[in-house]
Length: 104
Image (cartoon, rainbow, N blue to C red; front, side, top):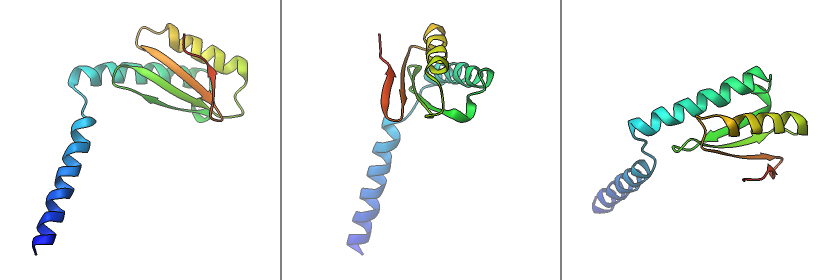
């Protein structure tokens, strides 16, 4: 029974640690949501919603990965538009695991 209690405690402690690292304040959530809206809207506008996946950090930095079918002109257009958005703090883009638009 003691081993069971120790296991439950360790599991609780581990989950508590994971949650605390990934919490987002209300202010960060607003910032992240604005960046998410900017990315989603642009991808929809460019008809690339199904050809890219992205992650937005709580500081509004975007990491975006384009499908191999997206042309260089299309992804450059998207990355430049994202970098010019006031809602986004920075962009790192890749295609097939290779960085395509280096950070400035």
